[in-house]
Image (cartoon, rainbow over all chains, first blue to last red):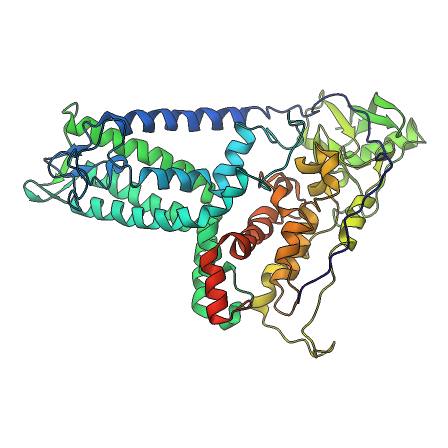
Length: 273
Length: 251
């Protein structure tokens, strides 16, 4: 059944006046601090990830078979020997194309359209609004009703892509248990594994995942398995923000560790073999 | 221990107004509304303030304390330093009537634009049967006390008066979600959520959730699920195809 919705209230007379309070905000706390920290955090990650994605060195530790997630999957002839877990169906790539060009755009899209990151950068970078109860600087506001922001609605497709890439990252982490000398466990394995676990938490706690697994249903009672799944995803979903930041941290940590080990700056701490 | 609290209260009406400073006695355990009442009783008998239950359940005493949308009756004085100047102002988003009282009729207009609960054809009152698990999501939204703090803090209308015509605000988008998720509501709420109630204006910055005195997860449990349903309908060809092939109409 479709509704005929009453036309929005319209009036030709000017709206009644609000209380005249010239100050942009009367907040007395440090409301500017969270957006500032968010901007710094996001900028740090973007700069680091961009530099590393184009470096094309020290992303594969041949001895321990550690592959940084920033170069996974590596499918080109430009990849160093051993780092291509799925073969090299793609030929040489020019230097301006990152070796993980098949995964990075989707991961970027997944995070850019993520409901948490949207809140984070709308507040901290676009300042719409910078904080609750603080006036925004824009004269007009149309939100996500038109291009380009209406494209935020494609989030679910990036979620599907991110699922595949997380499976690939998991595969990389499992392969890392078999180094040059056979099975072994080192600190690098722990770092890779921690990163993958948190990536799963972030990916599965996504609001689109919550919707796809069961949120779109009207009758949970008719779909008990999907209801159970939705319940579990909802539990994770309450921590989506934490997972968003934690995974940014573990991605950098994992890459940095692989970078330092593969360049010889530090030796991998081995627990077994 | 009693002390003299420093209040800066907005006084005026739609034509003019200003912040005025007062010193009011504050005692242990009191809330801002207690001080506003003491101010009325001792220094400003004509101060206008709307209030009713003093228990955070009627939603009448909504205002802004130090720039934050709050219920005056639920804002404890113990959360402020004794020498702090505490500003108390009316909700900025709505036209002021006088002092701390605003005209919130915008909200009633928006409420009327949402078609009421619509049971399936042939189902009479008294015949409604539903599983608890199916109504739980909607029940969270029923906790709303209609204080309109979420409407007040939402920058879509707080900072842009012109959006009031096309945007219903978080409280009423939550109402749409409540009906859309209701197991016995036969109405199609999704298309109207986007086109008539302005869901697309919401950029999910979560201020509505932050200020809700009932702790309703407005953004995560109402607005984002509605956005996903709109994406199903408008922006997801796979779901559209699946609905056509399997003739689904809300599982």
